[in-house]
Image 1 (cartoon, rainbow, N blue to C red):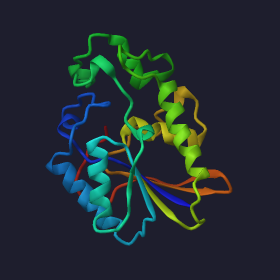
Image 2: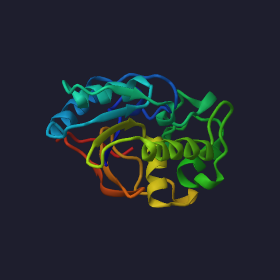
Image 3: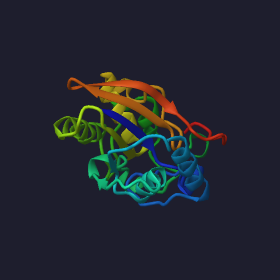
Image 4: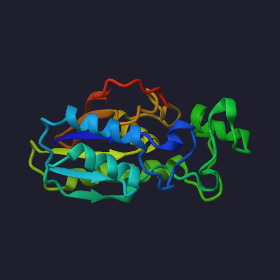
Length: 210
């Protein structure tokens, strides 16, 4: 089985580095464009199934990538972004930080020391549900050569890649948060995941790393 993992397109909150988490923010015009260009780049791929986070920005991205393919889009809460509770909507850019707790920056620099804010989610909780999603794919009765699309979010995708790579929590961010609409291709074979390509973009636009 081949799996195309994609991070959603840009939102207005992405542009100003606001924590989105489980806040349901739609794609902006540029985000729609990135998803459409990614769809063109993947037009030769015959997807047999597609999974998405229930959040609008991920669903919109998946629909735009799939285009007119007759593929049912399956919503799965395990693919939602990490929740940030009372800090959602606040700027997390280090030179313009609006989060009252300076130790929040452990989220980026020392995830093993991170403490979730009120109403937020821990790394352990995020890793548990994304790992459960990966295990559930192994149990689906897909044919060996089928191809799957999975539309998710920055931190959630890092969690998925951490599972596949066998990273420790301190290594959680790996190569960093992928750009909007970047695609990672993985293969599931004999019950094991293997990454073929990571962070591919199918557009010519300049998108700064998160």
